[in-house]
Amino acid sequence: MSQLTRMRELRDLQAALRTASDIAFDQEAPAGEQAEVLVDALRRALTAAQSLSEGPGETGCREHPRGAVDPLYGDKDDPLPPGWGRCLLCNDRRRRATRAARRA
Image (cartoon, rainbow, N blue to C red; front, side):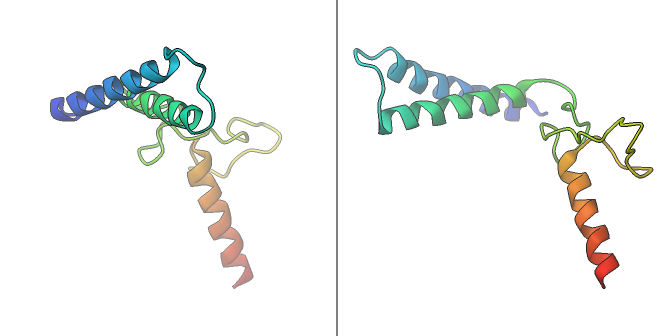
């Protein structure tokens, strides 16, 4: 990740945390639209913080580094086809393509 990208992510993280902090430490508990804004700010903060971490995500996938891990990955009873990785999103795309090819 370039230094410019890291700085942009850090600014995004700081802005989201400031927004969340302003809402969370207000005199009254957030409700309705304020609660939705708080949730959105916390999601943005989490996304920015995750992007600052080094290395590939849990999936090892370049396209979906923070995606879900396929529950069949490493399953000895129902193994994935050779060459398939840990990324559930990529494996699901492969499954759908395989089904579509069989139907054709």
